[in-house]
Length: 162
Length: 250
Image 1 (cartoon, each protein chain N blue to C red):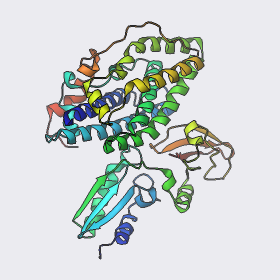
Image 2: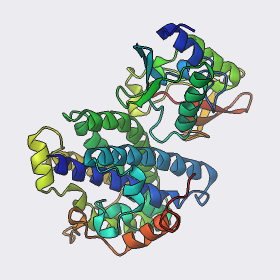
Image 3: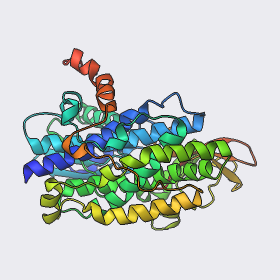
Image 4: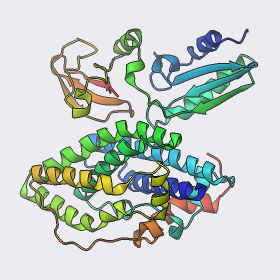
């Protein structure tokens, strides 16, 4: 394989998020930079949440994938800045989340209602009803909150907007 | 200045580490499922920050120690965490009250640290602001509910506040480490955030119908690594395994 940024990204795009397998770590926005310097691959990654236990898994998966493709000369660096944001997710990625049963982040963080905690209506990923209720600000993983639809009564995960 | 930066970063790492360790005691014991999840999630964020700070401290020190060495192979008189975080959790009101006091401090602290000339510290701060904003929303909403709730819940959160208050000033104390680093544009001037912290806490207490303790004696010591008797116990629990089996691998 010829070492180009595009080829590397394509490889990484096949690595699923360990918790949400319908999206890749590239779609999640964890891969911040891919540099090729003299046949050496330099990757910069950023954690979704500082204590996210899936980060180590993602790093291991990246190592495994690169080695499987005979890329042995690489370096992975962790950065905290700029801090990971759900704004980096594309509309297509958000749709994948919805189909999987997770309500995607509803707004952009530039919208200051995020700071004041006045979360806009979250719609049910199953029946699309906007008649939903926050059950818990914290859900099954650091990136999610728990909601319940008041129409179809299904509880569902909401991917928090940060 | 490397020595000052090491001590400063260690202080930030230790405060997060000990708070995370304390909070983790609630995992599986929360008052109900959602709160159990909430505190466990918050603990994860705090442990993440602890890891980032201690990793950086180890790098600055440059003696080949790792973040794990710093966490597991130092004694109580070498820890610089704020006193308030080492206190036992008490009941849920006390845990929540401490969270509100510390979360408010953290939010204003990180909002300043993000401007630091040290890129790593600024980066960790940028990450933590988002998380702490969420933590503070959680803790203050419970302080309000407890304070303005039943007679029983009001009494419990008021006595939690009375017990914790004397440990709040310790968070704002500064030493020559701070002085050197403030001049270099790296550290946060804690006097500046104290005013903001007091204003925010006053507002929260008013909303929660709680009374701020007056003329209380203020405990001090963490900057000199002088702690309450509780730290040694929490360390012995946290450090037993790696000290017994220093070569054990995950």
